[in-house]
Image (cartoon, rainbow, N blue to C red):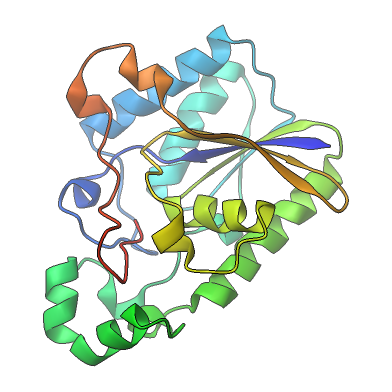
Length: 225
């Protein structure tokens, strides 16, 4: 089995504003950098050893990965396939703004149709992209421990693969917080979930602003950030 740490990027200003990011290259804010450093310190303290660290090439993920790589002395390798869902013209908008400007599309997706959000990707194509990339790296590093620093949507897509879930990944897998740790074991045929959305490195500070509130998933179509 290959042990895989799935790490969501730290907080951005668009996370705070509940704006869909998609492929927009939004950097970490001050809180996001603090979150990333606390996670890096935790991994170093726990003696975690990664054979490789792969990161989405978007700034918010790469900046998070860099902090981890520096603390563990492992170089970060960019893997564009780990990017968030491409939400096209929805990028930068809030749910309310999307409902106003793209009412028909919003309603069709809410009813379960897998349309390209904002002219970007369908969920099916997005999930295939992410799963294929992670499976390839897991096979290349069979039996080792890897880190994938990525986005909330990607982590949900991978959890769905591990649990053989075929419904709405954004409605089902909620609460993937900034710099949360999710751990999978990936074998030749079987995937196993070991840990989901662990943010204990943020909770020890007792600073509520560090434990970023995950996007509100109660309303469809749910928010990918």
